[in-house]
Amino acid sequence: MKNVVQKFGAPTETRLLKDEGVVEYRWQLGGLEIVMAAYSDKDPKGLESAPHSIEIKGQDPKHVCRTGRGLGLGDRLTDVKRRYGHYAAYRNQRTPQQSPDQVDIQWDDETLLELRLSPDGQIVSMHLMANIS
Image 1 (cartoon, rainbow, N blue to C red):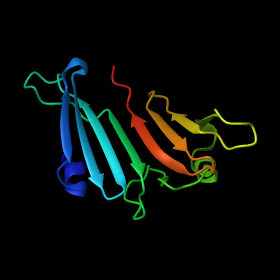
Image 2 (cartoon, rainbow, N blue to C red):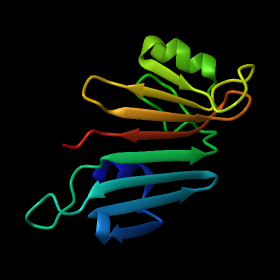
Image 3 (cartoon, rainbow, N blue to C red):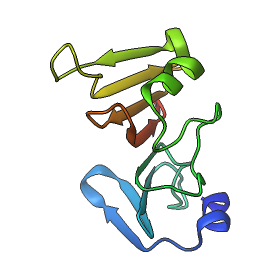
């Protein structure tokens, strides 16, 4: 959390989702929206856990939000294939002639990156979720 606040400043909004035991932090940075979630009941002192989920959507013209392999909002399906290749599973709710509407990339530790794509194949949102067991 400390690194995210250093990079983006204090969250625009903080919500405690008591039923889920989650603290949700939201940043509105121009056309970019970042939502980060952490469990609030993992530590006996009441401190939240490390973030288990981060979602980024909107416009990111300065490319401040990138994956470890350099993938970001506005990138195309070809970029996903070039950077992640066989790790990616393509889901399509559209016609076969169109690009998939979602790409899932899952690692051995079950961390999941969901990419939502526009009809023309551009990434419009990225959601990274850690497997917390």
